[in-house]
Image 1: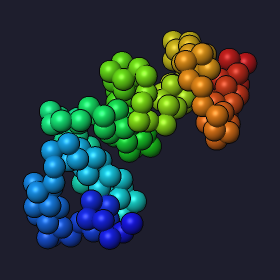
Image 2: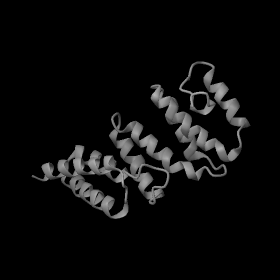
Image 3: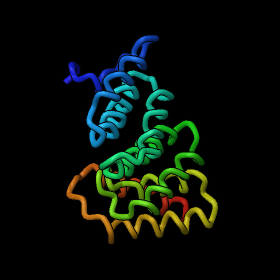
Image 4: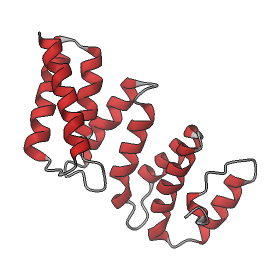
Length: 164
């Protein structure tokens, strides 16, 4: 699919203008999707700042069907900050869980991802909240994917270790 203009990892001097030109011609209900997908392509090309700016535009969009892509954009933003700025990642994960509790359009692993951030900090209140998040994930999310369950189990092991 590299021939699709909205999945291009190119972001040289002319690319943003070309992308914006094509985006203006796109149907309004597709624009948030195109912004989100191009952000993913840019992330793979190590253009994380450009990707973040596109995802923020999805969050600010009031165009038709934009809300369908906002939960995923929040997850992408949080994921992009997880290693670099855990407090900002935490902010976006919390916002995602609050604004989109059904987690449609996401990996549905935000409880685990937020718990991992809290476990890394390790205060008593962080451990309590991580416990609650991991329990909530098992009650609220029913994913059949082994990788999600494995990640949950790793977080649970880390929590058990932190609790002694």
